[in-house]
Length: 72
Image 1 (cartoon, helix red, strand yellow):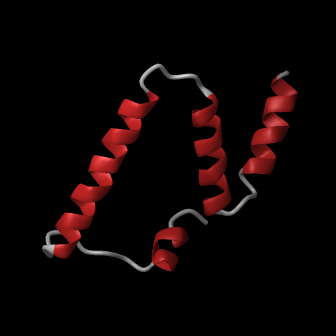
Image 2 (image 1 turned 90 degrees about the vertical axis):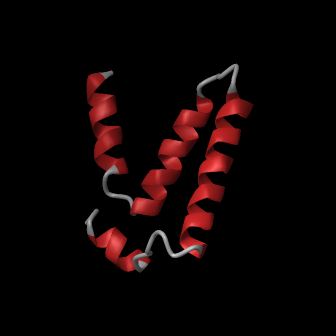
Image 3 (image 1 turned 60 degrees about the vertical axis):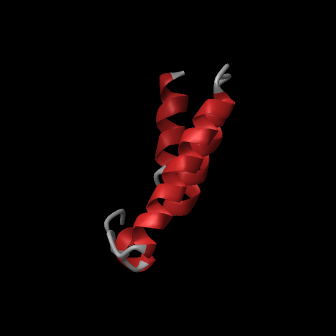
C-alpha cells in the first residue's frame, strides 16, 4: 500500500496546479460530512467578503501566471 501511495503521489505532483487543486477538492468532497451545507455557506460568505474587499480597493490582485510561478 505504501508503494502505491508513493507512486500515486509522484504522479499527482507532475500535474498542473489547477489539476492538483481539483484532485484535492475531489478527495475532500469524498469525505462524508454532516455539515456539508454549513461548510458551503462559510465558503460562500468568504468569497463574497473577498469580492467586496476587492471592489472597495482593500485588496489587490496578482496575475494568475505570477501565482502559478510559485508552484513550479
